[in-house]
Image 1 (tube, rainbow, N blue to C red):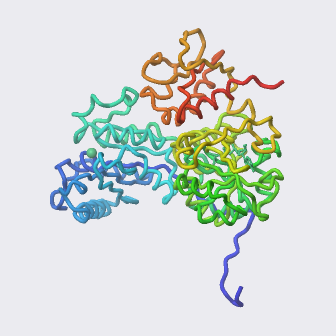
Image 2 (cartoon, rainbow, N blue to C red; image 1 turned 30 degrees about the vertical axis):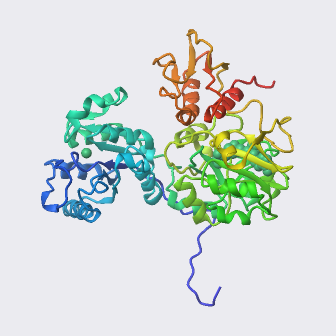
Length: 518
Ligand code: TXA
Ligand code: MG
């Protein structure tokens, strides 16, 4: 360091961290202002009478955002600039009324464009969580379309449906589950929100401070698109040791190292076979882990003494932001106690660890919901070590035939840590074949799949009534946890057809059903 340069020294024992806050994501047209078609001119904006007072009450406990679908832009009915002018005007008017909107998010696409940002996709809520230290789980969405309610469900919060705007007209399309959250107006919506808000636990920290904590050697739970990870700097053996201790994980089970971009691979891996490179190009960022020769900088503790390292570039925007800002590779196993069901939302982690974990970043429910696919490379072949979030068929389309590795036990040199029993609830789970009839028994939970499965009931979890294996994967662990908490004698699960992500779901069900070794 140069002489006499001002510098700030931060105490290492008291990390700087900001607690996450709750937010309310407000729809614009039909919710805050009258819905008068595509608004091109600020002069056409008419606020509902009660908007100002309602928002002033809301902002006392939550950050406010506006999220609006303006598909008229893609359809050529208004320009992006016109939409922005209207948004700016609304922001200014609210500011005059002493109401602060942290950001206005606008999706300009049409539904048929299949963009990621149109509601009900949770995209903008997750962006707000990343940029403004929001906890989606403690947040709400308010709007006059069933998509607004679905938007909230997908970011892990609560949706409030208002009967203003198109609300009355679309009410019949509202899912039954949303029944209790219908408000006659914004005023009523505020009353409902204040009645069911919960305090944010002190361990829920904003994404903005997670990187600094990781640099200081702290363990921080971070969201990824597969499952939540218990993260530590992969270069810090002490921090990694704490991860093993917190998880009660055997030291012979190595960790996956996460990097922000495929371009950073050279920092952790000593060589990349051509097949691995092609697969990384096709699927990163995403739920794919590649086992590659390791660089010396990775401590032996991370790889359980192996000369290989498992590497992945996660896709979740919060994970990428945190890893990029931390500036180091991040070791992260799933954030559960060893052997139990992996967490797919922040609350799962909090419920299991309570005060044992000091820092959790909430990034909403995991979109993929099962762990990454792990591949190894030797003898000029590609080996499937663990089925996961990318289907085998997709891997084979890029890399040609893949050999499925059969591991010989927990200490297996090639695929350590793939135990016959894993991802298991504490209630005994029994597995049926995909076509076996399901017989309903007393005090029994059911995990089923597809349109022909038994319907409804507190103890029936249909992983995807539409029969979509990706949706089933996303719902699997939460369904297992709900049934496990219901005090049942047993859980019966029916296998999915053995193709695509169905194979991954079956793998997890199989391990959950394996009897504990006594
Ligand atoms: O989706 C995922 O992969 C999640 C998220 C957090 O990224 N992580 C995850 O980590 O599932 P974990 O600890 O539950 O599983 C890591 C597994 C090990 O059990 C082992 O099977 C494999 O990765 N693994 C790690 N290093 C390896 C190595 N050097 N050689 C072979 N397998 C390895
Ligand atoms: Mg609306």
